[in-house]
Length: 221
Image (cartoon, rainbow, N blue to C red):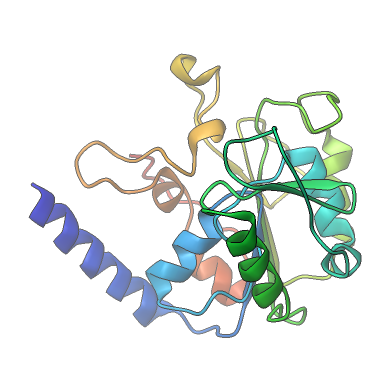
């Protein structure tokens, strides 16, 4: 079965790469999803938000003033996570895949210089959970709409909440075993047999990178 899954992944990644027409794009995300996409497409990381996560409300501030936060130096703190954690201005960055703060800082500093502001894409999720100040656990509609002020080629918010007037929300189905939402696990949850990420099934992400248009799929397996 593992060989079948590996073969399927190899074929699907080749299909993604063949369909991709855009290049030199920066994906700014609040989880590890951007790194997965770059890997699948065989592209260099043109983003500092690789192998890390950021609270949703922190991320809203972060992307609404990205050049400012990219000008800030990381200030590492102890005792929050077992992996390196740092402040970037007033936004907390959790480097959950870094082995040391030195590694986290080196990768962050190298990749932040690669950002292509003229070919920028934003991905975030609407997950239960507070920001670092213990604020309201849910993003508001105004939070979502604030993304409209950002100059970018495309944006996506994964959520179980639907807003007919916001075309960049990708709805994911609710599930009682995940506190009422799949969003909290959209990065990690995979289909049972082919181990395909849920977001791959829900959303045509290569089309999005080509056009900025959010195109949903009917298949949600």
